[in-house]
Image 1 (cartoon, rainbow, N blue to C red):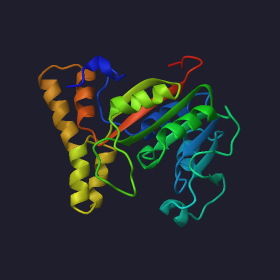
Image 2: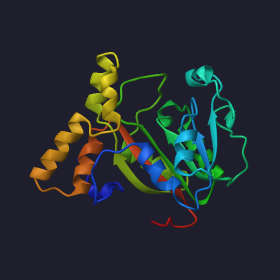
Image 3: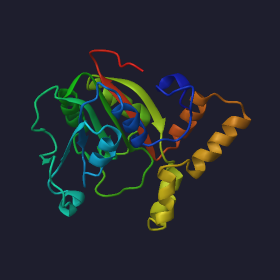
Length: 235
């Protein structure tokens, strides 16, 4: 079993979260003014971010042949690119957000290096990606939380937190049953296996960090927060 000191998980909370939770937390900071949504799809996060911080400048980027881009009707503030070389100057963004995109990236090391280039020193990279999730939408990878942390560090990031998202068993059942809509509730609330782990941890008087690591062992998605080396983020 993964030891609690092996991953940067918090020891105050162990609840399942999504990438939106980190986005909502960081978008309120006064030093976050320019945000890039990497793999923005339909561009729905523009409204999400600007509802939190109306003066925030949002830009989305995606590859031109994605299914979501083909269905998009709103194109302002959204750029298409080759998936590797973003047409933006270096250090131009305070925050890069990427929800469930990295598992679809053919060359993750190159993309992480590009994210690092785009962020100012001390800038934040947040999002989520897949661990134990069934194949979907031309996905290439299923990362372990440990492995993804190493990729982030190799790209020059300091990993602040890794936390569990929806559990893998629930994602597998959802896929086998044909993606019924009622499963969607488990992306935003504690999914069944995560709930069982939370109850067992409470009964066994385990620390939040230990519960986090148990959930991460069987997670379908995990959520990450990393900072470009250069300065330490304030709380």
